[in-house]
Length: 111
Image (cartoon, rainbow, N blue to C red):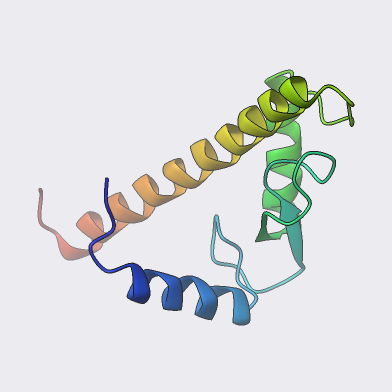
């Protein structure tokens, strides 16, 4: 899906990072920079996460069998980075779904 307002989206993301909020749950406490693709695979791609969400991402990576260790094989490294990113995005998608559902419940209307 193409972002129709990329500048506004970038501003929102920057504000969220500046506010030190968790990307998954929105908490402001105990924020850490999570290496989305893995520090050993792409050290610059990070997202702010609170400690509980960071722990959950780490556990999900373990359960998914994603190897976070460095390898000199670039194809393996890219594959590991993509899998790690997919785990993070899956968690983010679930969080967005929950937020959307909570808005429906608080509004009292159905989609």
